[in-house]
Image 1 (cartoon, rainbow, N blue to C red):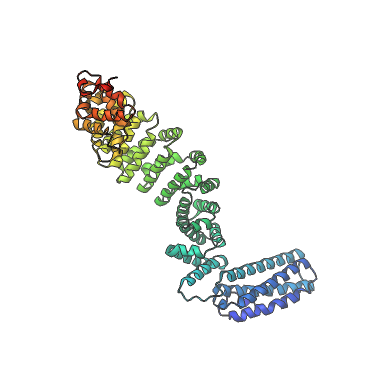
Image 2: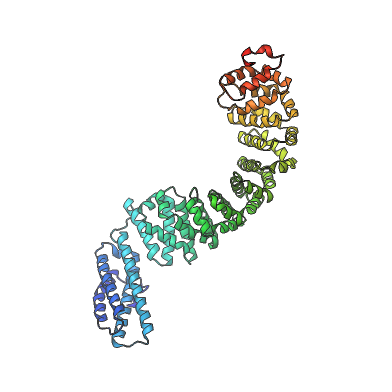
Length: 559
């Protein structure tokens, strides 16, 4: 019967009948064996199970049309012939050694187990009981089941074709695939990620990546979450270029707001692999690797691992040496890292983070890249040492002024926020004032967006700690009028804290008080004081304390 193996010309109906007829004959021959009775009893049990299963297959209307069943039958018949020969040897005691015979018997038991598993899988999938005609939802379900069956039973070529078909199905209608797929189907797909056949490993990674990036809750559930992470990390470490790219895409999707998967990446050595990925020549792979690091950073306990693996200097280097998508991803990651940890900010600064971000801000071609770079600079600028670094960079001061004058509100707001962080000492305020920040911030007060007006008022309130900056601002009557206008209680888009601080600073001089009064500030302050807004009554009393202005007020605010 060995001649059936690989023979495409046999009649499956006749071969199934041969197998069914042979099983009781082989069982009968095993009863005459004189040694290894326990093993032969196990073999008989398996043969009887196989006979029952094949009889069930014979009752399926379309089993003979299934190519997997056609491939399985020759292997079954070949195993039956092998068992018959072994039974005769054990009956005649004609074999070369007990150990070798025991090994041969163990092998046929394994083969029988495999035949039972494969035939049972085909039966449960339903593909033996239906005819494919290429139409209807039912056909699509059967097609999905057939594909997953081939992944588990077929040879390498069939598995490769099945994976190609699965990828196509997932790209066309992933929801339908998920509706038909079972947990064990996806489990075997995940198992193929560790295949030693490169094409299967690559194709299965592509399929898993599509599943991981889908919006299907069932897809995420079937992937087993943490269980899929370990093989994906191994692909990221040693897979082909395409496999690494798709593994990274999957890991990125799986670690978004998912601490369990993030921990799994870390536990399987994924952090060091991600840092290595950042050195890849593949632009998209590098960008995705950086984005995964950003996801992992969200889990506080993983941060020390990221720092320990040397991620920060690598990210800083990518700010200037990578392609635009990589630079933007690196800037986002550094922005995230610098957002709430002073020690991390110091590490970024020590690795040249500020300077690299300055260069990115200067060279970035898109508004988005400039915004990302400036956002990271803003977070870094909260560090105590940031003031010195920035003040020692005339080029950055020039960039800051250009950004305030850019006309793009998002960039202007960030630039003003950086000024808020930097301004403090008289020397810094002097440098910022001389650089030309005051008139540009004054112009922002006249904008339509409340957020721009508020951040401009905040920046000015800090810069006004220096007398020369106040004097410059007071010369701008439009700027003073806009600032005072923010005190109007009817203007509910802007909080009053920072406009009040700025107006209070201006009221330190008589000329400032006069400008405030002429702009209608007293009326606004009176109303705010009546509303018990903190600081309003104090400023009103301060302005009214000037005898030249006394006649403007009613006496009730003088007490």
